[in-house]
Image (cartoon, rainbow, N blue to C red; front, side, top):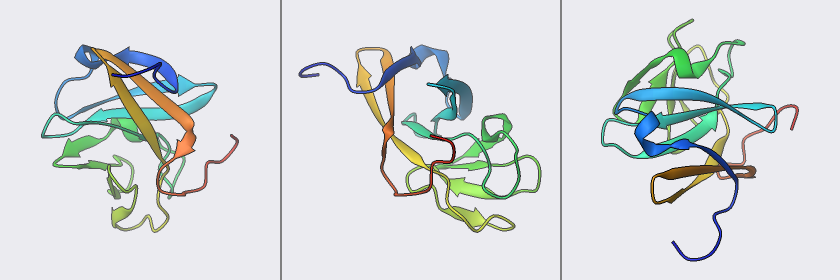
Length: 118
């Protein structure tokens, strides 16, 4: 990596297993740091856009995470809902890796989704 990573150091890549998510607070904002089925790391808003439920507690399949409350699924790359009842996207944040360190920049919302209370 060239230069200083942007964002906040949130965890080590080794802290997140494939098809798992980790809930992190970045400046008080809940973020789900997720490793998809291919091993790629993503960062999305941790709160389902349908109900106030933590997405990091849901199942990861492929490049999507499912909310355990009502079954809404969200694409980890775009934040778009893939299954109802959710119809609003969740924010997708910039992620940088520096060696094994994972940085998330909650000021850089990649998909333009609303970031409530930030």
